[in-house]
Image (cartoon, rainbow over all chains, first blue to last red; front, side, top):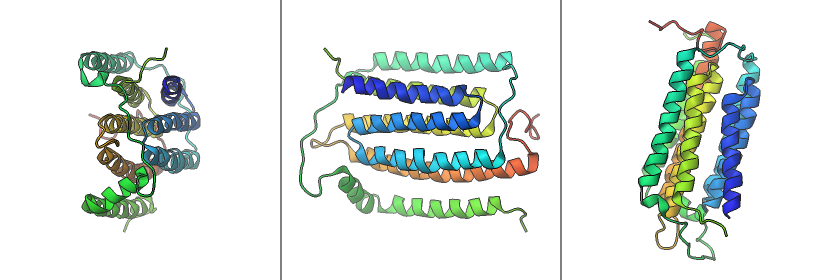
Amino acid sequence: MTFLFFIFAALALIGGIGVVAFKNPVSSAFSMVVSFLGLAALFIQLNAFLVGVLQILVYAGAIMVLFLFIIMLLDVPQEEKKKLPFFTALGAGGIVLAFIALLVVMLSRSEVGDKTLPALEATSGPGTSDVHKIGELLFSQYWFPIQVVGILLLVATVGVVVLSKRELK
Amino acid sequence: METALTLNHFLFVSGVLFAIGLAGVLVRRNLIVIFMCLELMLSAANLTLVAFSRFNVQEGQPDYHGHVLLFFIITVAAAEVAVGLAIIVALFRTKGTTDVSKIDTMKF
């Protein structure tokens, strides 16, 4: 269990570094897919099977295809090898290092974080899968938010169509 | 002997992934790559949610409310990517570039 965690965490982090480090946007997009696969594996390790599958289907599948489609449609050139301005590098590095330092300090202080993976009760039979549980919650307790999200998707669709039109009247 | 996985392991990975995304947003100049780094930060936050829901066991099961929240976040992220990329395409049409250092109309 533990070594699988380290493998997939490394996969997610290396993919993330690749997104930032590659000059070519297409390479960035592909290393992003690697990062999302690692994250999905971590989700599945945390017993979030539905969410892990959704991560692969929606993020690594649909969203990254959309990104690649736009990159190839716009024919985005590689960033020319311009040296990073000194203050940009300094500011970015400072902010990121400060963030990681804060993370380490907070995590080492918190007592909640030392909790080990609690055991789950074994379940079997119909109606006990996490898909079933999440679906039940979505359509009972969260019936209103799911309507709002439906409207949001409709608005986004209309917005994309309007934005993509060549001229507005 | 294996060390047991703790909540800190997952929170640390999620935080470092978030920091990588943040670095990308600050350092990169290509608008599309910046947008990808934003998605990376969003996913890193998702990992935190899943970890907390798994470690907050209720009646022998993970806290499924966290998974429901994640479901909504993924939906909103999908809508956000669609709209954001449409804006980038519209911007590319008017400016002819996706380099943020060349898009400076509103720069003081």
